[in-house]
Amino acid sequence: MAGLRFGVRVKPGARRDAVGGRWGDGALVVAVAAPAVEGKANEAVRKALAKAFGVRRQDVAIASGERGRDKVVVIDPAPDDGAEVLAALLG
Image (cartoon, rainbow, N blue to C red; front, side):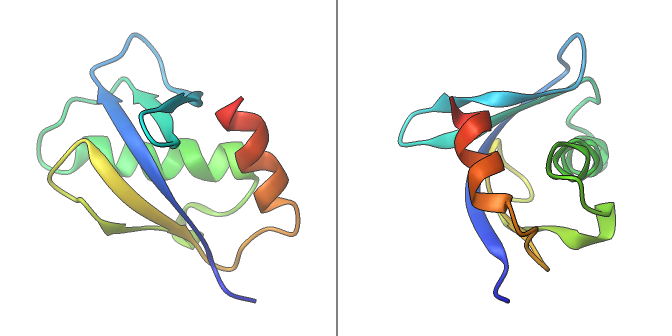
């Protein structure tokens, strides 16, 4: 099965980690408490998305946008209900 690929908008330095909401053209909003230094926010994004989709952190990869707030993420292998979970999180 091909991986689930989607855009995310990261909000580093948030009060708490949270996944949900829509940004711009349909990117998923991921707020993380970690600061945007030394890859800490990227690791927090992977962890938060893994929890939201019920997969292992190792299954979540940042395909592009490592150094920016707008990223493309791939979950591979994709969970069976991945598309439904994504739609629910986008609201």
